[in-house]
Image (tube, rainbow, N blue to C red):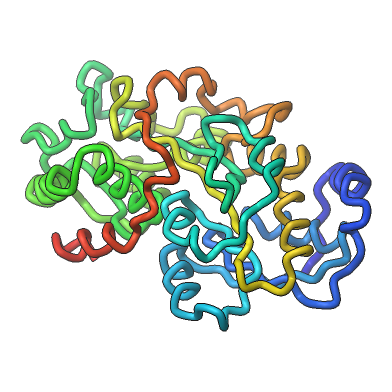
Length: 332
């Protein structure tokens, strides 16, 4: 793997690891629902700093979660790194318990009290919209409003996206199974447009295909950072709306792994200040530890706490139930 260095990581993290910097005789196998473009440099720096070889299998979070469950005790995975907390909750029984101090260092809103996985970055669900075709006074107060006739054919979503599926799971927990099904069916009836992922929704808004989209907060900064005039904005819904769900990417150590020392070293690396700084600056996501400067495009954590619904991320682990529901209504 190409060794791409992050400024300062080799010194800061290398000193912090101490004994963990001894190379493992075995390769650390990581199943990653996070994309290679963002995390590839982090994995390379981990290898360079620790001497531990890492082999990464990239794929969709739900796809890899299903694979891990199918492989059971025969899985080669040592670490599972998920795009969203829903998959982590679904796999909790497959993870080893972490040392208490691992989650003890995480900011409250992103912390997993169950301590079977740890957040590695945070994000929120938001509404993106065309700044050219949508007036601010025409923005919906709730995600539930998007089923109204006024939004017919104007809204995009990505049913195969892991974060969207985590949102649906949270909807089921917070509002009930029937309410979630009714909303999905009403959105379909209102001609919501299906896209592959978050980025393609933003592209579709800019291109005039749709006027609104349901995405994670960090995507838009990748467009507006290099182009402040990019014609898409984003906003939360009203305070407490389920559409403002706070989510986290995170990782757990696979229970049957025989390489847990190296796996723990990898998690420790992901929570190091320099790795967290890299994730927020390159990925536009929230750092999950104190003392890291969030990207300037992000809303404050105070604002996030104000608008987010109170949903325990450890309670949104029924990914299979959500996939079944999405199949039932014809979205998968």
